[in-house]
Image 1 (cartoon, rainbow, N blue to C red):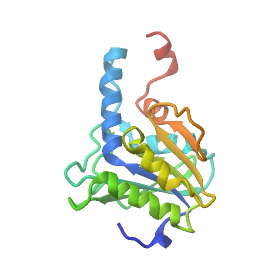
Image 2 (cartoon, one colour):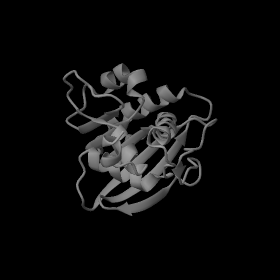
Image 3 (cartoon, rainbow, N blue to C red):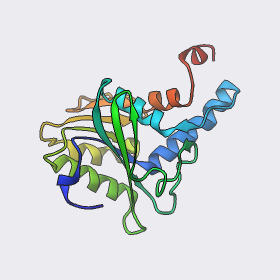
Length: 196
């Protein structure tokens, strides 16, 4: 990934694609069993829109860059469509209720560990004068302490960190549960969950 922080947009969603692959696959498999029905393939534009809304964006004409950091050995989001990080989800854009979301994908090229590349990218975003709002979708349960360390001096940025479980401690940034946008994108309704 280029170290030129001036290339970052004002609004970004930074995504550890290995974590996203793990959590979406796990949710789809488990909820199909719980609900006893086949769930939809996740439309990536729908998922990114739900993440944006849960992250505090309102309907409008925002321009948001979704940056996927992925492992060269796992370039697919298997339960999403489109799914290819190297082709279909790189340098593509779509319009949603929150505005235009531009997707870019960056591979570790087997040079760096995904966790390190994600944290380096997060640090670049925190240091960039261009970035005003960041939504962070990393493996918080695995390297959340390092995420907290990187964003502790956020330079006044509006930051929302997504994780699987609620965060009980007080943080200088917003936290949201990644489960909700994933479940909505899978087509799971609250009524279904109440009956189980």
